[in-house]
Length: 434
Image (cartoon, rainbow, N blue to C red; front, side, top):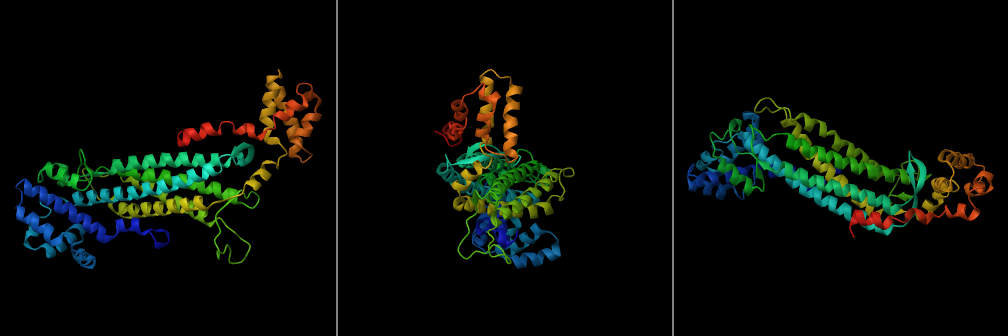
């Protein structure tokens, strides 16, 4: 997590002060429940809130204590006792450090998910607007990087919209998956703390109770969460890579916005490079890199160990902060994307009409020509165009075997660009709704 690729709202979730505030709230809500159950004095619970509710925790002091205790939760509890006073002896009664750490981590992950969902909404809005703007803008579809058949640029953006709609649904599911709370004590048996305490804390923190925890919340939940972020990042890279290809000099069908005063190269003043989408490609790789460690965290010894702890201290902030930045950058790229319909048409015509080869093939078969023979006739003329000898339509009209089956008018009918777009409305209705 570095400032260059961070946004304040997301980084705030992971700052020490925020983490200690969540720890305090978990402890204070637990104290409330214990007081109601007669486990600790009610006055003690009131004092805990009164003394520390608005306190600013001294991060340096907590770090100083931890250098001695070698235990972060004990260091925090020691500092909390300095603020609360004698009543602090009732804090953390029957609880274990994982009750605090795991519940806090899940609060942070749900908060992060809420930001990512908002990010996706912003991206979806930009994609929808630009898709309708270019709903019928003709461009060439490519397979293997080679011209295939015509599509519209709106369809390209609609595809991305559908993909990120699925991404949003997955993040919502991942949020629900990870939004659990455990206040079950050592090895998760509730021996020293009543299950009703857990239920109270869960409700107060906006979580659900973990049905069964050991001494930790099961890490398959977190693996699912980080895997979801990895899939979203893959979708980010997919769209970024498409834009990078379209910006190549030989293509130049779309281009990142180039602002006044922007410089593309330290050496070559003419350069306008796709730096934002290249950056998104790299950021996406980083988010996906966190998926495997999250999967490996599922495997812990017996009721718990802390092999997962160091991993999560890194991947929690880094993955959410990085993906948040990437989604916002991508939304900006789409919003300001420069689109060149004239270049799209020019590229469509580069192969002299070869993009209509399938229509001619089908027309021949519908006239009774065997498919293998029809394919041979069409390919024979198409390869002449590939060799730069001339125009596909001209060659077809001059081919005696083709002319024996199709008239000039029938051949020309198969070169109608609009024919390929007759179902665009149907596709848009499927993607965006009626």
